[in-house]
Amino acid sequence: MPLGIIFKRAFRDIRQNLVTHLMTTIVVALTCLVFIFFSIFSLNLQRIADRFGRELAIVVYLKKDIPQNKIPSLYQKITSMKEVEKVKFISSEEAFKRLENYFKDEKEVLEGVDPLFLPPSFEIQINRAVYNPSRVRAMAKELAQWPEVQKVQYGKEWVDRLESFSEAVRAAVIASAVLLLVTAAFVVSNTIKLTVYARQDEIEIMRLVGATNGFIQGPFLLASFIQGVTGSLVALIVGLFCYKYVYGIIGQTELIKSLDLQYLPPSYMAVIVLVSGFFCMIGTAMALRRFLKL
Amino acid sequence: MIQLFHVYKSFGGTPALRDVSFRVRKGEFVFVTGPSGAGKTTLLRIMFGAEKASSGHILINGINLGRIRRKQIALLRRRIGFVFQDFKLLNNKTIFQNVALALEVTGANPSYVRKKTRQALRSLGLIKKEEAYPLQLSGGEQQRVAIARAIVKNPLILLADEPTGNLDPDLTREIMVLFRTIHMKGTTVVVATHNRELLKGTAIRKIYLEKGRVIKED
Image (cartoon, rainbow over all chains, first blue to last red; front, side):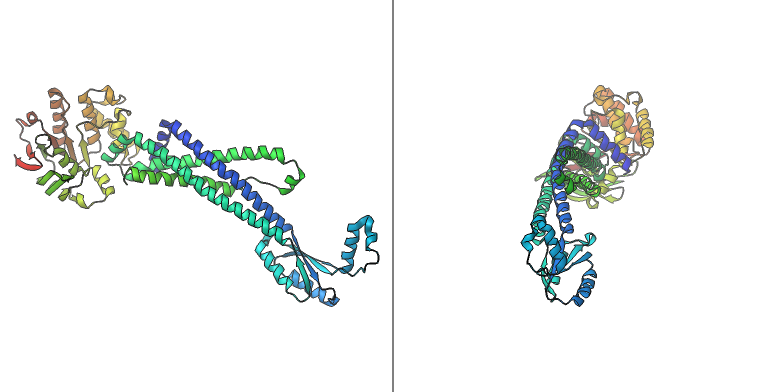
């Protein structure tokens, strides 16, 4: 059957039952909106966790008695690791200077202390492009096993905690997504059922004059897909306005600015729209299957 | 064109048709008659694929109805016109839309649908009423709309279930003339009626049903 006829019939159905379709679209929009808020929170938390992890440096403390001639080869070895962006060698003297700077006016507390008492170290910056918490963890473990290394330090606990929290939020988002989409599908399928009830005579006559199931179902499925897509688009627009409004209030502080919060990426929005349309269509197909005894 | 072999049909243990066998040739005009409850409507519904026979075989234009899929039944119905006693018109649609529906379901292009629908309405004298709604028409006119819908797709077979059941004698005659005209154009016509007056003085073949059995043919 030509698509044009399905479109024409679907739009005619929507026009004839505008209020019902509008109410359903609003319910779908509200459902999607809840999911969108969850998603904004989860995605930004993930971004913060990623960014925080990327900006962490691994500090490799070497043994104090390490021979000077071994340092260049260790430097080369670390630089050759693909996770490594930049390596800086901090000698014992430089470390002491940093400590002096840290104490500033009270550096007299360091008087009489051996300037070589601090161990030499390497400060490693992780390559952002290949950042992955588990890889960083593995790398730190590997470095700690080198005989020249005394200790490896990085914000392990922070990264782990942030990561597990953002994992938990992501799981909550997925669970809410399934729940909300099933709700949307249920609501849309019920609206379509009402429309089918109202048009029972027409459907019966269509069957009697030779309409295939595809011809009968097509407009209903398209109408529900349109409801799903429209509802999610409305939710995305409302969500964007809400985000901008809230960001306008809280986004002035340096802390929030530094977090570089963002709205949902375009690919994520496209997935929301398509999945919403698809779920509404599935709900309707199931309702029609039972109702039309297909 | 239509062949029935030992067809039985029962509803929850109550027999509606018993061992019905007959054949209707291409281009033939046949009356199926009998008192109310004889099984006329069930017989027509089985021939139309709206009911399944409990046993036996029904061949329509060589197609065994017991062995075809649901989609094929829909396609077969596009070759069969059915006129119902209660007209089965959609009151919220115009006469034009009611008739056009039979072509729209086939996926025909809109200009063809318009042309053929107007042609059918013209042949039944309804062209001036194309924008009217069924409830604005008389019973006879409504039945003519139902006939227009049945013939708009040039069916091979036209089945009519008590097409004059709700009409007065003048309108009954008018509708019968229409059926004869359609038959003369080559369509196989089967009319179910309990109205004996309709059968008087015609040389048309008649199949008599009683309690679900064929009791006589002439």
